[in-house]
Amino acid sequence: MIIRSLELETVCGITSTLPENTLPEIAFAGKSNVGKSSLINGLMNRKSFARTSATPGKTQTINFYNINQELYLVDLPGYGYAKVSEQEKKKWGQMIERYLHQSKQLRAVFLLIDIRHAPSANDKMMYDWILSQGYHPIIIATKLDKLKRSQVQKQIKVVRQGLGLSKDSILIPFSAVTKQGRDEIWDLAEEICGL
Ligand code: GTP
Ligand code: MG
Image 1 (cartoon, rainbow, N blue to C red):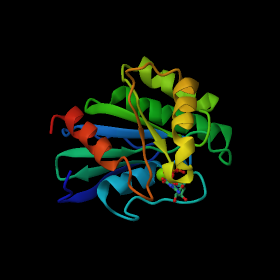
Image 2: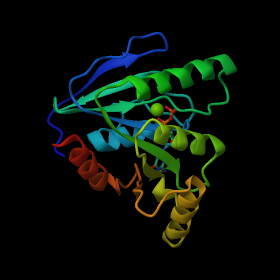
Image 3: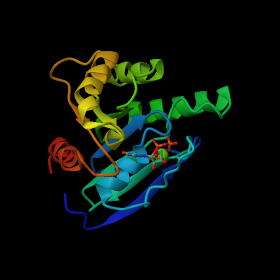
Image 4: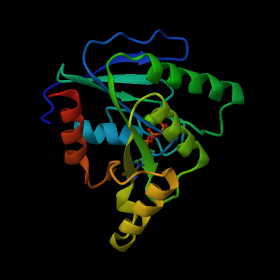
């Protein structure tokens, strides 16, 4: 994908009305700090257009990035962020659920999992929930650069088994540092959006 234009078009807080877009949407879900905003920056070829942080809980809104007036990349807040209240967590869970449930243009959900760790109970819940909404989550195993090359295949297995992925489920390892995996993710996103 050649990026000709990009714009943060819509930012939704807990009480916002979700946009009724006409272009296809691709959403990125995953626990806080897993690298959703960094992946979106990588896809957009920008260092910090989407705000990232070493502290979990950076993205607290649903952000719609319009790419080339052709599609949206949708940055979701992370789940499992310990520092916010239970009530806040619940509200956010509901907001993310509402988006995944209501969006008419959502074409695919990418679920990000840190390649270094086995998926958590929350990851598994999110995976199952995305499935139950009729989407087949595409797994991005993030922070690939943090592994030694000799560990990669083993960790891919750990992630696949932890989520209970079938053989035909797609898992793409990605690094925001080296950009490995970027072209594969774009090819898939373009195909899904019919571009
Ligand atoms: P929330 O917005 O809090 O839900 O987090 P997020 O999933 O958007 O994570 P974010 O992109 O802000 O990244 C969190 C931290 O991980 C930042 O310090 C990033 O620099 C770092 N990070 C993200 N992706 C990678 C990667 O592929 N490799 C390395 N080494 N660090 C990464
Ligand atoms: Mg973020």
